[in-house]
Length: 465
Ligand SMILES: C=CC1=C(C)c2cc3[nH]c(cc4nc(cc5[nH]c(cc1n2)c(C)c5CCC(=O)O)C(CCC(=O)O)=C4C)c(C)c3C=C
Ligand SMILES: [Fe+2]
Image 1: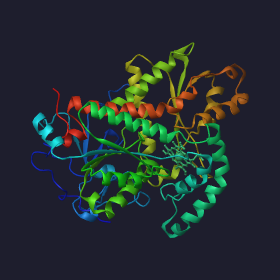
Image 2: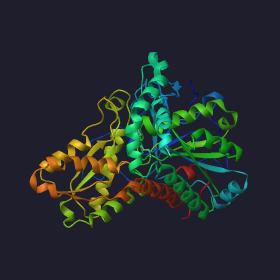
Image 3: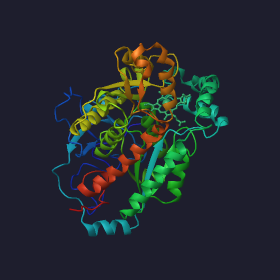
Image 4: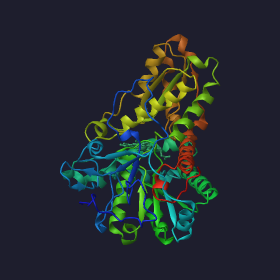
């Protein structure tokens, strides 16, 4: 599908138009992660976290050319709105995005414009995207089928795509017993729906408190409520402006990318949606609210150790297969590393200078995943004499896995380490969710108070100062 991205685009009426002139319909807001990477000395002042960057990546005019995800600009002036990430490196995106710092730019909308806009029949929606999870043990195999049938999860060469569903059926049946064991150990189902619904409700309330009567929807990729169901509700509610917000702080082909690709397909086919204004936030790990929330959680947890300064902060993130990063250009690893850097810098500002490690967990299948692996790293740390560990980035639902890895390695650790202090509790499972929520709220609050960000670009939030 070729999208007309340059020049076209539904424009706002003049009272709505952003004076920045860079964010229009379908524009993607993104942060410093989308700059070409540069070495980041720990002590340099790297990023102004409160700054917002607007990226001219995706304003599309034709009915068939609506673009929800990140877009590729070819070397020629023509632009392709790719349906998937498998055939073209995502890293090429960075070279073609026009990045604007909005820090010094003008105020967008007056208070009266704001009131007019809200009263003027605009219906704002926020669509939170997440993975979804089986609610009962009987849901596990069909959930796994949906997951493995996704070409962004099992990436087959185009020629072999016809095998996707049979393969998904096979893998889901084989994997189901192991998965069921995991879900049985956390109460017989995934907590993700409850957590995401709670996030949606908290966000709705926070927006409502700010006089933004937005409806917040949850769209899951592999289980109920499916993204398609959320979209149907959005249409029934007559939403006219939609903010699409994946609940993954860092972008990966396999998570936000997959959900955005699905949405892109739905939008392309639907006249109502094609005409609805929308904006997408592909990743937000670099937002001040998120970084500060994570730093605060770590700071608080460190205090529970007997010798806090000796604790190794062990970021155990969800992994992805190595080929995603090396062959398909998934920015996930770079974004994860930058996220860890930003959290550590924030901690340094607070006088916390503990050492840290980043490792990846949750591998599935026989292929190589991002290294270092969490289970192996735990042993190495033990052998190096690290006695206290705090793990802040553990993915939702995976704390058991990490603890099991730790426990199974306990015997392999040298004697002084067998009394390892472990700075994590079961409640950590929801930390990512809570931090994500905080981040989203902080993002909105930040944008209300500073005049930066997508809501201002749209002219739906006024400046307070
Ligand atoms: C090739 C397979 C997988 C990739 C790639 C992958 C990436 C990925 N996943 C998350 C977050 C979560 N995944 C969860 C469950 C889960 N993921 C896979 C496979 C891949 N994930 C499977 C098979 C499962 C089911 C459980 C299992 O059998 O191990 C969950 C938990 C959802 C829940 O039920 O609550 C999360 C969260 C990220 C962030 C990511 C890439 C960055
Ligand atoms: Fe996963």
